[in-house]
Length: 171
Image (cartoon, rainbow, N blue to C red; front, side):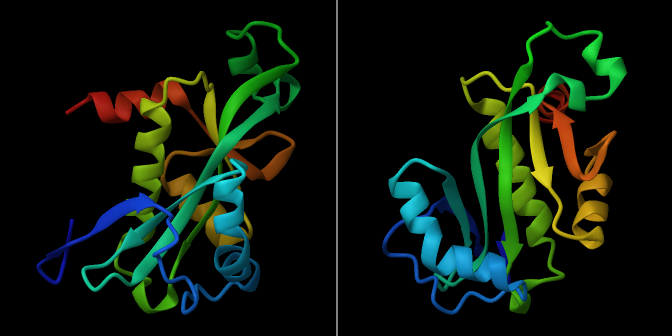
């Protein structure tokens, strides 16, 4: 993808990435990225990825980690097709944020697509990608990207991995 003619790149967060000026406008997301993301990466608690512009500015980030969802939380139509394990393995898209100076350029969708691609290509079993929407705007964003709300938790959404894999296999 181009940024005024230059290449954008998504890469794993590393020590050389300057996170100090990142500001998405949501204090907990900014604070996490500036102070906790590096430690989470080092301790294998989350895998943070950054969208880097041609001038090495960080335009956005997301995190992936392993999680599980209770079988009883999923829609009945899906539960009927799954083994009766109490917990179903999933991938957590824990955080996704775009610097406010870069918002409105499609970078959120780019980060989401990268996260879904990485999750789909993983060799670790995962039934779905799960997100916890922070607010109604975030929930609507994920719904536009074909995520479905869990029946009893409208701010917790998921997209089945089979659907995600089809997204990348077609084309």
